[in-house]
Every structure is written in C-alpha cells, then in structure tokens.
Length: 341
Image (cartoon, rainbow, N blue to C red; front, side, top):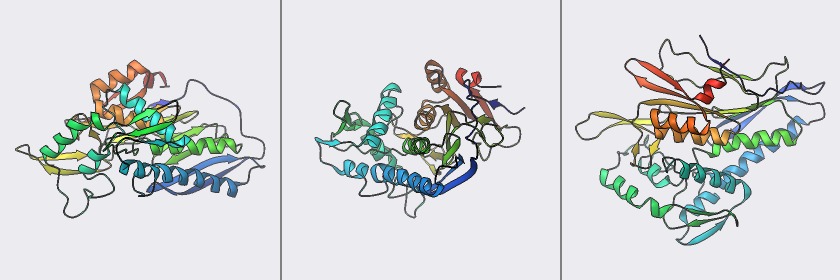
C-alpha cells in the first residue's frame, strides 16, 4: 500500500479568479529548475520568469564553488585572519549550515570542501576524469587532524565570516535547497501563492492546483530499489522535500584487502571517508527546502540509528532507506509518521 503524507495545517483558499496554470523554467547550478504555478491575471508571467532566473543567478554569483569569481571561491582563497562581509543570502546559508554543523557534532560540515576535493567530488580533479585515483589514507588523516583549526568563524552581529586559514566552504548540500526557497519567496512577492518550485529534484509547494487538489509529488526513489519498494506521495502544501542518496555520484575503488568499495559523494567529515552505513537514501520534509536539504545530508552521515534518534529528538520528518540483503529496509521518524494519512 502506498504511503500518503499530508501536512497538518491545510489552507483551503483557492487561487484568485481567472488564474491560469503556467510553467516557468531554466537552468542553474548545473541542473534545471522549474515552477508550476497558478498565475493571477494581474501578474506578468514573462517578467516573473526573468525575476526567478535573476534570483538564481545571484545565488550562483555568491555561493558557487565552480565559479572562480564567486564570493565563496574568493573566500576560500583568502588569506588567514581575514574577515569577509556577507550579503544577506550568503549570511542566511552560512548561518544555518554552521548551526546544523554544531548541532550535529560536525557530522555535517559546510567547511569540508578540501575533503570533497580530495575525494574527487569538487570542481577539479574529478572522480569521473581520466587519471583520478582514490586518496591515500595519510592524506585523509592529515585533513581530519586539522579540520577544527580550519573551521570558519561567523560573527552573527556584524554578519561577517572569518577565514582562519585553509577553510574551504562547500555549500552544495544546502545552497540548492536555499535556492528553491528563494524561488518560493520571489513568487509570493509577485502575488503568486499557489505553486510548486523545483531544482534538481528538491521541491517546495504552496496552495493548490486548478482542481483544488494540493500539489502531489512522489518522494524520490532509489533507482535500484527493485520490486516491492513503494514510493510515498506527499502533498506539498506549505512543505518542502529533499533527498540525499548514495546513487547519485559515486565510484568504486579497492582499499586494502576489502575488495571493491562504493565511494559515495556523501562524506563523513569526522572520519574523512565516504559514508559506509548502508543508507541508500534519506528524505526529509520541512517547511523550508534549505532545512530539508541540509538535514537530509546530516542524517545520512549520522546513519540509520543515530540519524533516527537525532530526527526524533528534534521533530524532523525523515524517511531512511537502508540497504539490506536483497531489499531496502524502511525506517521513519515519528514526525514523518504523523503526516501519514
């Protein structure tokens, strides 16, 4: 039986009279974005589409680790002891990411960019390029030993960030979710309150469709799940969803006498190695896509048991799929089960 999740608070307001179902779409962050919306008669759809793209372009200019001239890239190259004033978008992401990092005991670490690059998941020396090889244990250990000294320091009162020397920020596990939230806020500023926004599989929705139904979406599944694994559907009505999975970017490598191992792009910054806790995916529902994005990664690193305890202690709606012998085993948090209908 397919699980159906519905938010606890439902706003029954319908779109304004004369609203039409419209779509806006484009490219950003190395993937596609799209918005389906009930466009009120007074709103210019073309103007709105340009405003949505401008929102995303600004996030890329600030937070891309692929663009050499982005604010994030300039921070990563900055000299030790330098302070950097942050624009509102960058501050919001840095502040939330560091808060999750501290709360998770640094199982989630937005300053683990050097480790990401070492394992070939950064913008250079990629794992899918010729000549790449898995890093040596000594190189990994050296990064782990110095990670505490390389953590950025956020001055929340003055909205600036200290580069302690060698800090390498990587917002790839939070910026895309934040960008979805920015699309949502842009829509609402323009008078659009019934929509679903998506970037690369991460979504946030509000209001209803033309037939008065909420925006129903499937929770992202695991490609090799096999028969018998049902895919839940959720009403994205004031909710966002993000999924972290071991099937997106990975490679196999041999290490010691253990034979081939799967190296997922999700790394445990505490050990310096890819997560090896058999989690195939973690999906999180939250009111903000930034939170869903960051928390799905944090829970993946924490693992099935510690991650579930973390989610239950904080009221996080999460679904864990664990690879078992011949099947995926599902575990859900109490907050997730509360949404089940």
